[in-house]
Image (cartoon, rainbow, N blue to C red; front, side, top):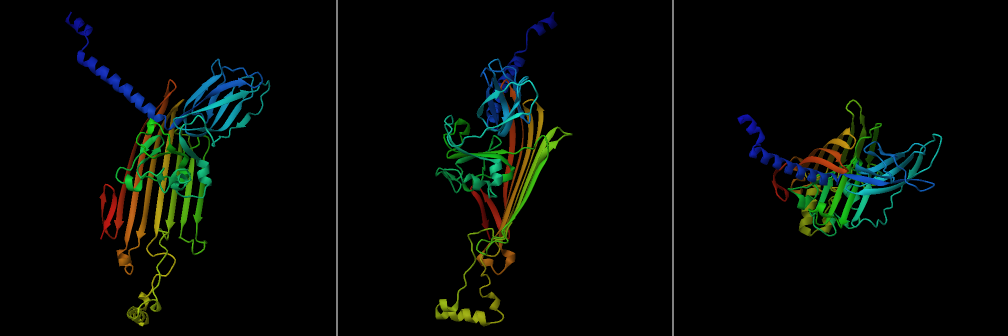
Length: 444
């Protein structure tokens, strides 16, 4: 009797813990759903008969590669949720009709793209009907915000080596300032996750640098952004990184230099870029890697060398000292040692390495791991030590970022959980250094 009575009366403490767990689970599901909306989008529309215009039910609609798939309803409507941002291909198939493929369908993070697909009836298997959908970017009445989108293939075709140069092409952006705002008032989002430079955001802005060849698209929003960008005051820059092709491996390399440029344009620039991506069939995953290496002889192009003071340009007393320095064989080499087009001790180099691994878990579910490494270092010309190279100053900046996350579909709602860690450090050679909350300083 005692045991039966204990089982019929539940423990109040356990009941309270169960209610708290259910409440926390509901709050977490709502949070990760809002995060996912920034990295994936939705494709919806209707499939109809090309001749009669009647809706077609039971048509198979999927993306190529198969990020999402579904069947049309009795009204011919469909919804593909959780589609990664970028250019995608949509394929529609139905027995008794020509298959249709719509290429270059632009999917944007947190937004929906509408399609209307018309299928033509046939009794024989024929080649697929390919339809190219060109995105109209001049006027979009359904969009209330002011934004520009630069696709990944456009970034790879433009003559630039920094993403900031592509952002500067957008209206309302000038020298890192958005609509006249100060540095640090903008927000940067990488694959749906906001990344901020907590120590030097007011001085250097975005703490990380991505190679243009590692991006699927860049979206710049300068006005009308919604509550999901609550920390942005002047603008939002959203980056969508590339992922490996699940069907085959693709690779590219490039090398650029200005060693054959005229003297007035020569900076001693040399750059090497390589990227590769494809399937890892034993793991059932895809991998994409990208590396950018650059070197500069003149890392500060605004410093265009030193002028030489001649005796006839100075007063008699100074002219006498210049002639004594120039005519003495032991000190003649100290007269005008730097008369080239660039200052000495201005060389520098940059390294950007990025890797991303995606592992599908099922229809609409995916796990992602990404790693980003930056390093930039350069010499700093110091007039006080222009005759002693050993004590010339130098600066090195390193940046690291690691991210992991998963995404899935739960009753037409995207769910995504992502964690990202970023670090930035500064170091100097030839001098002591200290780090402050507003930036980095040097002291001899």
